[in-house]
Length: 323
Image 1: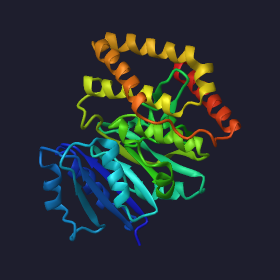
Image 2: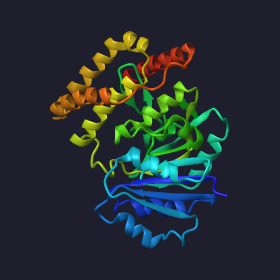
Image 3: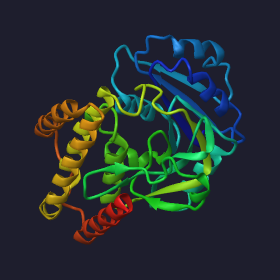
Image 4: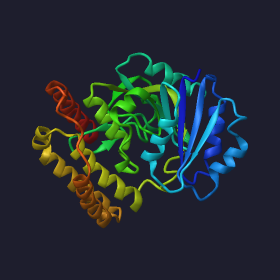
């Protein structure tokens, strides 16, 4: 019986993909499947992998989905999730290598309570596994999503804890809740779709956790090319505005507007220094256009006390970000 499906979205991952899958095939827990979703790659990476790990010859089972056009991260993982036959789904970036016990630890953590929607892994840097790359994401009233663990010593992140949202690069999700929430929002294309999903899960009353025992090494920016570039900046800035529009109740917009505006101004200055100021401005206004086309989350049934709790969390996360 398949307990977990591991969904790997792939776009031109020739340098990384085989190492990622090879590491999964060495896991102790065998009752899982791997679903590789190739997003119209041009480097033949998924076809080459299929020769090494054929669908009918690999154990655990491996399956492939090929897109004829680049649909983006959100659409790719949604296709993988729909194809899954398991109760739980792990999303895994193609530029990762998992450590022993990775799947089993995530599977054990999410089964602790039915209120746990997702569990984020301990992502370490590929070139130095003593340094964190991600330990789950937080969101604050400045409108910023961030990982407090990034570039810090892994020794500081050895305790299980609640987070705002799991990093979609290495996390396990409860499939029935994923379906209930509508999956990843494909309007994002890529970037912040995992924070949006975590936000919707919290509005629905679920928890997101970080597990220090599920360790994965991450090369970083395997598809986009670098931490700061026009493509990534455009999508991140656009999606940040859309995420806020979609998930914040009106009263939270009113209470937090000055801080949100300050956050936008600070980010504009930051990206201007990086030589991406014009990209930021164009993306910001593109975000307004996206908001006009898309719908807000269903907030009517969310208890006010739960909304208040999320507001308190956003405020606390702001202090964590600026201190």
